Image 1 (cartoon, one colour):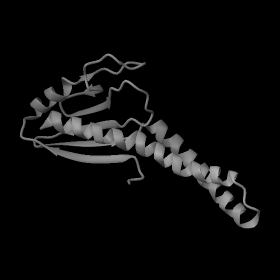
Image 2 (cartoon, rainbow, N blue to C red):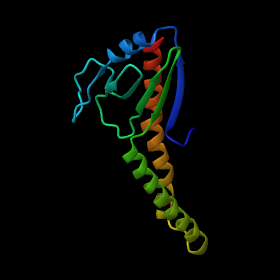
Image 3 (tube, helix red, strand yellow):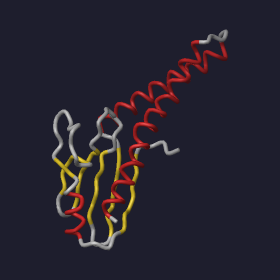
Image 4 (cartoon, one colour):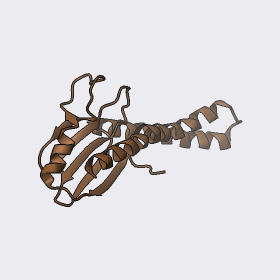
Length: 152
């Protein structure tokens, strides 16, 4: 299991750069403020001849949805996926705070009588990592499959 929500991949192809641009651009619409739940396109964002910045269009809420940056080259497309910067900052601060709280709880376990609510505090840290795992990494697999299908 990867901890950091960052994925880089390279998709090799035998098409021209213009063909790749057309294939990707045909599946992209501009992002709307409140999303588009009725779209037939796969992605929203921007796409030009050399690069693109996309997000998958979904019919549900997911703050951990990967932001897709891509560079179109003559024989390959380089794709980087990461969480939105605001979510990354929030989760970093939140996980640091929960880690400190967990360390204090572990310290308290050794120097005071055991209480069942200690287990609740200690379970919050793995829950944060599970949120990132299921929210981000599951979406990365879906995006990777869709992009490979489009580009190949």
